[in-house]
Amino acid sequence: MRDADGVSPDPQADVIVVGLGAATVNLRARWWSDSRIADVLLAQDRVLGETKRRLQAAGVDLPFPTQQILFHDQTEETDGDRTRQREGWPPSAAGNPAPRAAVRPAPVPMPPAPPAPLA
Image 1 (cartoon, rainbow, N blue to C red):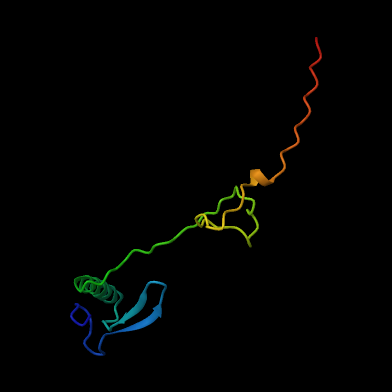
Image 2 (image 1 turned 180 degrees about the vertical axis):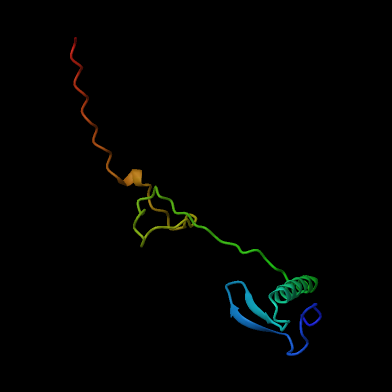
């Protein structure tokens, strides 16, 4: 940061840890520049660009955020019962809930419609 154009030497630039994420260490870089908005934005661009370049040159990985999405099988007898639902986990050694079709009574068939009158 100290070498970036537009960064004032006094007070000295620094970096502080502001948080720990699930897979991140969140840092805040602080530096001084002239007070005009254009100077602030140019200094920020130069500092952030130089910081990224140096981190990558030092072998620090800058990963993309990732998510894991789990789907639950809505055809099991436990669907809707939050205490027993598997929420997308693979089959267990203890066995899985039976499909809903296997535990529900079969629907009662409708009687046939009466024949249409003859014209």
